[in-house]
Length: 638
Image (cartoon, rainbow, N blue to C red):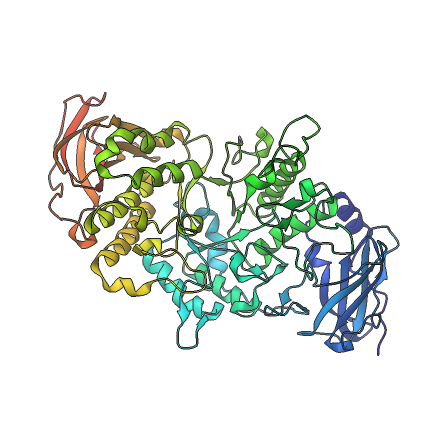
């Protein structure tokens, strides 16, 4: 058996950056790297285990025997153990056997930096290097336009394991199969981006991927790393951006994972008030530890660099920001200033976003943040957290609460549907109808809609019409785009069979056409995060339960008008105020017969008159269908 040879990829500068929490390319040094030393091919291993007194690499190549291949600890107090093992190479499985200085504890851990992991329930890491040749040069060159805050941002959220299954073999589709089927579907539906729920390796299917053990390894459930690259490549070649869910908030206590890594709280905070999440029964990263900050920021940059992804949706930001999140009095300790904010997390998120945008200025970071924490999507230099966008959870809750109400009583709750614009531009908001809203007894989005069958589908089309004309990015969870009636089941697949019914096909076409409308209408996206891009016509018509507003882009010559009738009573002679004279054209109507609507209330000819209305100098009389949204284009005549 060949011994471990002295070898290192680390320079003194690397070590100083690592200790300072400023090394953001750790994946280039840590983990397993196939290389040639003194003419012999093998693998270099490096792992951080600061309280260990012995670290061995165990694997198939030494029959998993402890002590056969002992790594050497560096002399610089970095806590890094490293060494070169000849003849170990591509596809060899391994773990680290760690003997701790703390109470004689011995752990057996997967490599935190492994590029590939065994298929669960197996837990070993795999020595791996990819040879994918990227073919998305055209996308990468122009993606700054697609990912800009002044571009349409319509996201299809997806759980890879349950989108569609191979029913004959009773399995999920592979990355390679998705590269054909999913790409075709996203293109057909006109979404601009797809968002994958976590695809990093995770041990427990019911966690949906939100309890990670392999932060640098795509899950083996759907294939090899190159196959995921092929999927992303195919999406890019069809002008579809890719966002990954990223989970820096917590991780599971599985024996092979990051918890108690070297026999001590290495990655997690040692104080359980800061290091344990009571809701999810998981461990919380120690954001005060420099080496952990380097690990997390390196991981974010790894996916942006190695997998060409266009954005990261950062999970559970609210749980990170507050020391008292889901904790009773006495279960948390205030910060040094006496507040409830986790100051280490604030500085970590600011540093994360600064580094992401410095290295990849043509991507976006998106925060799932459900509180009123200020300036989440404002630049760090102004005191913000530096995210590109934030999920608009208030809009989601208010809107879904409103739409589930019997239409007979909606006029008494009109403020619920108009309230979002009182704070609509305090952040760069994305409107999410996400996976969290279609599980655990909440019903599907369609399932929330009141009334008979016709009204339920009309309500759903109305909701989407309102969503797509409201300022902000859009996110829709899979299945919602065709009105799935049942809750999402991560063990099955979407109810594709319902597309044999006209109502569901009508909703699907509605969403495809709304996506096209959003993408092709600059007034709906160019100023979607600026107050100048929005103007009320009437937010207070509670008597009719009709909402109307104007959307503006960069061109003063074209305005978009959205009018939404929240009741099943048609308004055949409804007057709306307009800011100027011009020609008015109906460009979308959710009541069209091709969507499953009545098809009786099309605005074929509208006249703008100099009749003041709604505080505007001009107005027009229009037909507003029952439970429907219409979108009008006003070509301004000066």
